[in-house]
Length: 462
Ligand code: SAM
Ligand code: SF4
Ligand code: F3S
Image (spheres, helix red, strand yellow):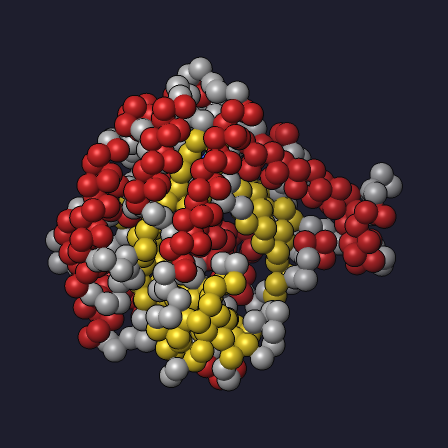
């Protein structure tokens, strides 16, 4: 039997889709060439912005049409779905549609009524029931309702076959309630994964050939797990245990990074542990959201512009070669031109290597949605100025490394030039260089010779 995943949203969703996919693979299921010809299709949804939800609703419309074709209904528009029409030429082939993720959690009560094409709604607290869904499909049973009243269970192994990089969720949920954000409502309160479970997962991933690991959480700095002795371990403690464990076990995992870091919780002991352990990448994603203290306060971010800049100075003093990336949101209620200038100025001071940039999107049920809104054109224009400045900074920051040698994880053959391989640096930058295919999956040393768009070109040294 075959499955197909369609994943929207952040790294947490990518990790949870990969973990659910492992369950299908363990049962001998295969990945389908397309959703049109699979037995189970899974949409892993995101609620972060209205635009994300609208796009997903568009996909649900498409799946409604697909299910009609697959059921050979007379009202099916088979012409639009040729592959599916061909697939059912000998009779109907049922398709089970699973809707999971944050939008499934947010609209748990109504989504199935609005979209009868969905067979299973799997909220963020119910995804460990995936195995039961697979059982029911294999046994051709009618869909049943899932119990989502239990506490969050971490997905085990978010490994994508063949990949050298992998996400490892270490904590889940969020207690911060930034006034614009839907995440605390759809992902619940913070909970942390036990230390030994994380170490065990690293061991398994190492065995699969994974070389680069990203520890995941909405705010990894508030990690508060426990070890096998029952002692509590904070984020700095976890990073140190991971670094020690990888050394003791001579693991081939060469890079460990993390996201996201809430600036209010990134303490000096975390900076210290990164600067003392080479396995921890000097690449920190530190979402600022805005450069104005007034807007940061309205967002409930719990730090000021000055505190953020002070944190950046402490990080850069401890690790002059650090690469900082961020998230920026423009057009939050109450933002003035002065606030926009404060954000542009903060960007000039920090010099981010890259940034995820958005305009504020009101989310029903969050405090900021009730505040007086800024017109869409104004938000878009402000966002464009931020994007333009960041493009300049990305170019300046990346150009600084031309002429340097870099440790590179080789990931694949370049799609544009089959004689070249593609890899990435510890700062997550792409590098293309000529080398033997046998190097895929290993760390090599490359001299960076030029920058073409956002990809370096280089020469293999060893
Ligand atoms: N926990 C992370 C943090 O606090 O930095 C952020 C996680 S959130 C999934 C990713 C990004 O989405 C946020 O940093 C923010 O910039 C953006 N975001 C969240 N809510 C938004 C909204 N209502 N409108 C626009 N962007 C939003
Ligand atoms: Fe959302 Fe803020 Fe939590 Fe990040 S810290 S997930 S932006 S509420
Ligand atoms: Fe979206 Fe949920 Fe992530 S709302 S951004 S998938 S935590």
